[in-house]
Image (tube, rainbow, N blue to C red; front, side, top):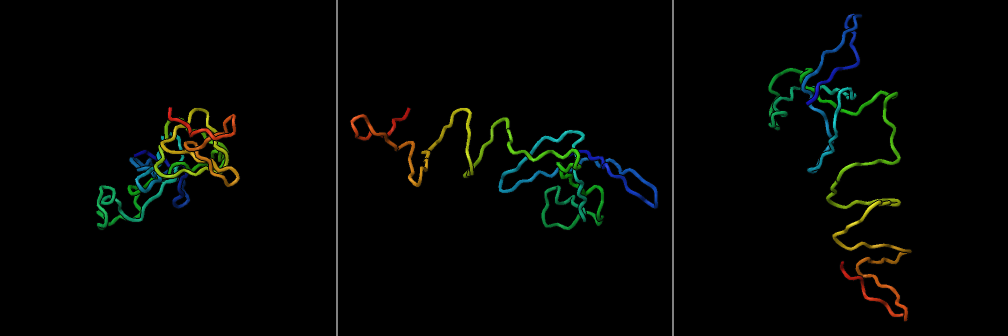
Length: 158
């Protein structure tokens, strides 16, 4: 959880009042299907504070399908923080190129539309297929034309 200090004050009967510090607010990280994207949150990061309509205590404790533990509505204690919302002047630019440091594991297929540039080795647990003008060429099964015009045998494992 994180502590959230709203940066927008409220006006009550003409008087401007700062909102209180919201303590122990769960941050929202998008995920599904056994996968979740998380990232570090630092003091000073902006977020959108989402206050739920009903008491979420039972759900937060792991009980689905139960009525709210209390009859409270729109209570400050039933909030979530959607981190990454920024005012226009400090919003990050949408990058054309992104860089990731560290390992990332994908389970399933990865499709790249465009060029893939690799600085380092590529290791594959299966064959690599190239498609040149509708002709599919296997890295594991391809051969070359030898000096005398005959084909070479497929590559040997290293």
